[in-house]
Image (cartoon, rainbow, N blue to C red; front, side):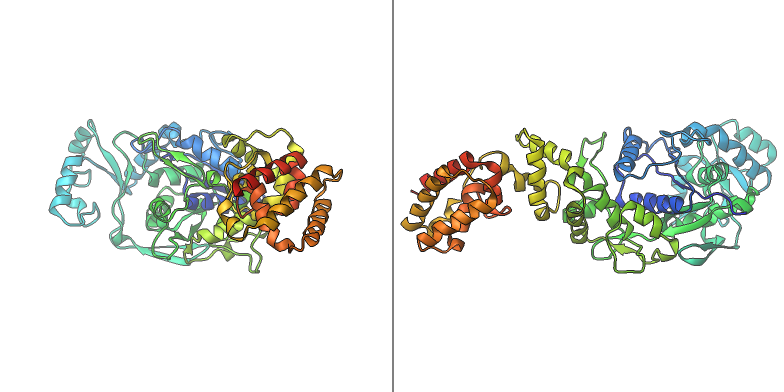
Length: 502
């Protein structure tokens, strides 16, 4: 009988969540939900020197925004609590000591200063089978010397075999093998009693009954250490299936995408704004840039996977149905911000405007625009959504509906302005002031009839009219704008522009 599918995302709370990290969450989540399993978030905070206040809360805020809610976590609880490794500290020493007892690990007493000296003396120094015999450890000391040394600080290191081939089957890459001669004796338990990632990830995956471990391909070099730990601890039959996900690459495909690349090229790489408490520097995220979570999740899913068709737009529910590890690519995926923008534009058009109405209202209020009528706002959003790539675009595309433009681009009107056009708009004001109808179709009909009477082409008048209402050469249909802002405001804006052109 197959064991229950249980996957985990195990981030370190050291800063903002890179889009590659969110994609790892997404693939874990999709696989678990498709298989009717559990998605667990475990915080790997054993390196207290790198711990950043606020980073853990940021991780859970990001997952909530994306709609990727864990079944178990430090926040959500669960049957395998605690889910922070720092709170599981007492779990690890017994396993490290067991490895020493069985000859698979050893105590090392070299001080940081001694190791630095060795690195300075020996280029590319590694603490390994080739060097361990010349170091201060329980393999080179007597039992009495070891017992005495253990009264002071020490670490526990894995004893890697001198030359052994370690193999496993990766769900994406197929058969993968390593020679242990290339791998150093990693520290398993640090001098402060905290485990390193290598020991903690194996122990916790075992105790939490993790069935599948999906992580970035940058962790592949660590795989032989982890595989041997599963074997040495006697848990080989319980070892999860592995999948090492492809990297997300720079737009030119040359190397892994980094925060520095985003800064240089002008796009976000973090899911949400992250303010580093140490420097107070804020890195802009996809959310604050104006992305919908649906678009962000959708674009991440297709950075390294497709369903075998030409389809590109998927809801989270559709992704759960269609996702398969078999269709995850082995090669890295280039990040294309233009394509990311396309996804967001499509999702802004796709979802009901009520889905983002409150967010747009908040953006408008931040720009000094108070919304009095929600029905009007919804109507305006419906009118302009096809023109918006980001939610932030709604500010420019809607603000003129709710307040008179701060400036009028009269310079764009003047080159083709003459007395006949001036007379047309003067007569238009009079006609509209007398009119009892104020629907877009009625306004357009009257506008065109008056143009014909004055022997003018409507096309010559539309741009000046648009600029009068909007302030510039943008916006939806001008008669729709006039219908929404009302007769009094429409007339006021025309009169104001005629004075500027006089």
